Image 1 (tube, rainbow, N blue to C red):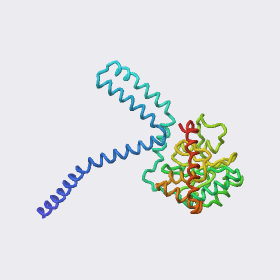
Image 2: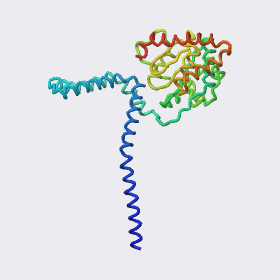
Image 3: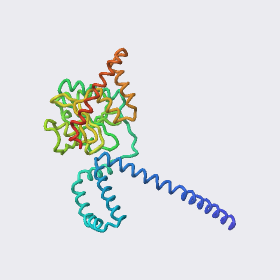
Image 4: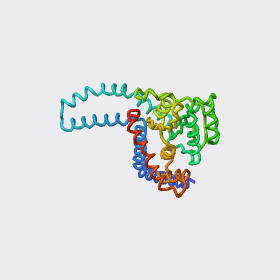
Length: 311
């Protein structure tokens, strides 16, 4: 019995040693893979919060310090050493909004959550509703969440969980009801909630003629990676806000193309072909191509014109 027990223990120890050997081989790969993943997600987070200039400035100072250390520039190294604590305090004060956004997104981010994006037909229903409300000069505010969870925004409104329908969207925004002035959230291919309150942007460089809806759309994109569709009640202009920037007065074709580009991984060629096929006859292809080229220009023009809003 003793020999059998010893033999079993030896087998278990041999397997254990083998597992340790395998882990020793895999461990460097895991170490590098996890570090690369964290660096990639960190860069992605900084890019979405517009905090890349902060990282570039810190990298530049680190480079200067490295040069001073390498070439033994004692005076420069002494000055940088003295300034370092003060620089950290200045960075914390000047970039406090960006640092706060980074911390909030770290708490809200769901890197492994599957994306349930609206289909082409559902987006078409949203844009159709936007066109109808634009003609009637009725305001509209629709939020499309992406990776960052916005449950705190959804909880401020009324839960609907209804299928996406242009008639329902128009009915919610057309009349001066309790849900008219709030924002609608479309998530997982459904109208999740309506009448939601969005954070207003505190930027001082926004056009004075922009109302609360446009400020709310910018504020939402400053606090999350959501895409916001806006219809102006005063002018009927259809706009898109994303990445803390506002693109004003876009055509329906531009809105569809940009929404598909931002919410899906499909190619732009398929997007343009699908949208064009639903709006024109086959014999009008050449005319449509020239019209599309003309309609794409306002995006570039507005990006340059509104550059100060997002920068």
